[in-house]
Length: 193
Image 1: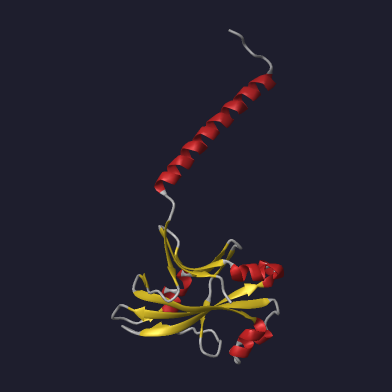
Image 2: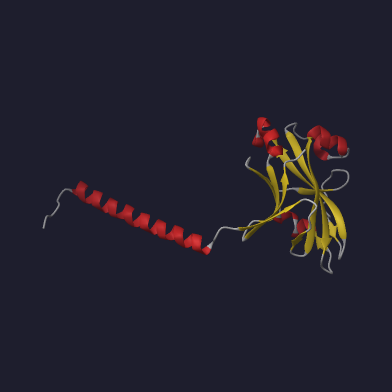
């Protein structure tokens, strides 16, 4: 049996053993996590198709892309006039139907759970309800057994997206995502005008 007195040789053996043990633990953890959290299922819908969402049904009527000038022209009282010139907007018009016998405050129970995503450009953002004048609608109430049209605006900042990528973003697949896991439920728009 050979005994090593050279400390650097012993350090190399110990470090190699630690790296091998760490690698084995990582591989076992990776396999275990993927068994417990499998890939999300997919439920994709097109616009003008009713989608069941917990306590209501949702139908996307139209999605538009508006520059700041177009947005300010359509919504004359909008707060956008004083904002940066680098902003543009996705405007989504939805029809919501309340399936319950109670009023639903959509700002509390809905808007925080949905997002707009665009692939392959990588855009993701949450929106806000707006009223007919383009101002933030902080009292978006869907009354019991009521069907009502709502508008959600999503900001697109050219500083983040890139001015040269805006046209590619408009041609991307745009997902109005209502849940991501365990089932990715979304209404898909194949490009926006």
